[in-house]
Length: 329
Image (cartoon, rainbow, N blue to C red; front, side, top):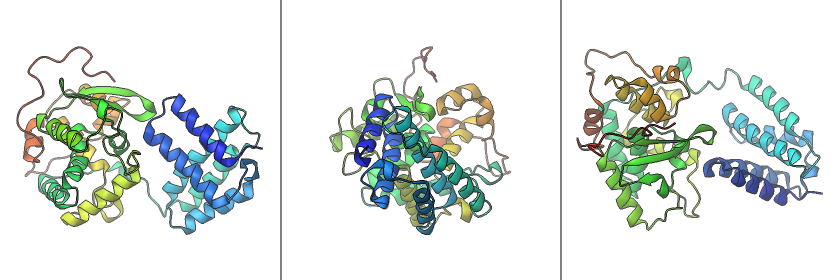
């Protein structure tokens, strides 16, 4: 019989051995531990299909949305498939997770909308950006909160990528940043902001972080979770008096990344370079971030956008031409 705690430990070692990102590993393990504490089953083989149904009901009663439940189900399905694939157990629950997860999605359909309604992406105007930065500065640990909010604006990162950043990902001599994106794919690009890099450098020194440390970590030294970042972002927006949450017609964390992409597109910068920098699998994904300008919205260059947003000076990281591998995907 496979002990549940041993199953979780084996799965964690498996994910680390195959270079899964720290944030992904932590999320999967947290989902498995939640199931373990809820079920109170000492052995993994004690988990039954009926318990899976009851667990999904528990998540719904606890207030989890349809998207959140399906995310948990996907993680637990992967957990179950790996245990069977590695021949650590014969209790294959992957099909159960998939079947019951599909039913949950159908029941929730209409109540919970997709991330983008009508594929809508919001551009955060200068006035609102200034309010957001001011609110972040006024919070406890304001320097950290300001950097957390600035990072997707300056670098165009996804929230999961921000949470996975390590000190060693920054090359302060060249201004180059290496990011682990979707599918654990690495990409490198140059950060167009000496001011932002200086803030990161000072932040690292003040907190005495080492190369292997996460840039934004919890008190336990673990990476910041995506949900923790999203909750912090929403608190900052409420403090700033800015609309927050897609359901309320406000901004989400992904709109920071979208604003970065849109501002660069409107400068006429080659879309292929932007697509590689932000980790899109195709140029068509990047094209979706074009927006229709109103008469009072001027087309501004990338440096001007960042300067007016209060992010960077007018200088760039280096005057030397970028090497051939500057935009490796």
